[in-house]
Length: 456
Ligand code: F0G
Image (cartoon, rainbow, N blue to C red):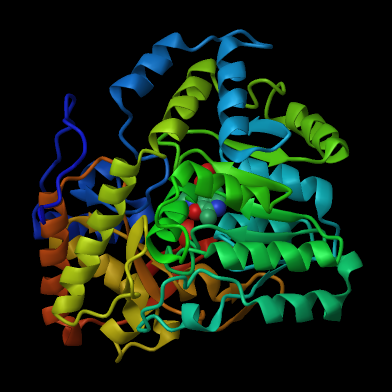
């Protein structure tokens, strides 16, 4: 069958609030033209993030009721730990309240001022946590990943040659670990191939360095490997996941993505000494080592979600549904990062608005226009997010100016997807009249969350 259907029935619904263009005009102005500062109820379709926004299943909610809230050694903790170990295969599991807490603990133990942490592309919280400790976060995306218009199967890959030459040039003693983000969120939600994971792991280990995976969207990445990499078409996703993580010494994970949970995360390692230090830090700021800032019910929900996300019918639908939006936009020549990512479709704002220079934030302007047009909230991943160096105070264009349409898991149906396509098309038709933006007020770190903007 060609028709895409959701592999679930819906038993609980949440109403959408419809607004008029006039109302949205007032609301976005009051929010300083920053979609992060809008009230969620003033948004019709919220594509700001796929993080913590998933719909849980009946089984997930049943897990919530089963949650054991004992302070130490809760039943829910053992279920969580067993599930994580069973899927990822690491020796130590450290629960955290979300992904960035895992990052802070990992880097807090491993990164010293002046050290360099290479990655295919660091997510913004990952980068900020490294920089906050005085380290340097270096992105080494592969060449095809930097050309939005070039379709290629694994645009999330790291440039292996650049990785090795960076390690040599700064010296392995100044590299605490090598990381790979799968899928590569800031690089367009693009997958990393098994060959590239193996290659990056091989280089890290050649220099005696630990190799870590930012595992947020591990199941989507594994499914892309199944679809696109030779030799994996007949392998179950669970086995592909085992192989991926078998090359790594540990991982950070936000359970708000590929675990369907509304909150949660974890950090894994095979290193006993590191695990002991990480648990000490965990107890200091997150909580005891068998809950790490989560309620027992959250641990249960994550354990259920981690199994559900590996269901291949779900992954098939998930990847097809993003591809559907990508294909339809492509068909009418709307510039997107090609091919569509797993959790999102990324509009290429530089080609969408070629008359708006990068320092006038074309991605930001486009995200505001999508809200005005149809009440859709999207996020700029471009010069506002990455163009400012808090160390030097210098602003320069980011590698790309993208607008991410991130799809919450199991939340929107195929007709919502049609609405999104129509809205983007309407904005595209009047693109020539769209102006750039300037920043009126901004903080030093992570400015995209709170900066205020106005039209130029
Ligand atoms: N790593 C990646 C690749 C991410 O996408 C995120 C979060 C994190 C780490 C941090 O996890 O939010 O649980 O602390 N990404 C969200 C997003 C916020 O919208 O892409 P967290």
